[in-house]
Image (cartoon, rainbow, N blue to C red):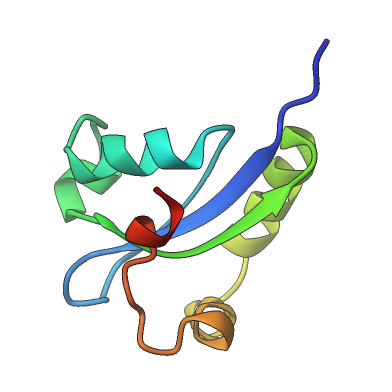
Length: 97
């Protein structure tokens, strides 16, 4: 089995009131799917189209572990994580394409 890189990412809506945490092996493709409303469910319902945070891992299994960790945090800790590297909550998508 070939190991794939993994990404943990956080999306928000235009008012920065909703956080969505996900994992993927292809960050550009996955964020595009969210932005284009190709993903049914939470992100489509709450319009979480803005990429505000991501981490890169050498293996997808490590990303899965990290995603579960972050999902277990209080919102305040998630916000602190985001603001450490993206204090204005800018959409980072253009910086990765």
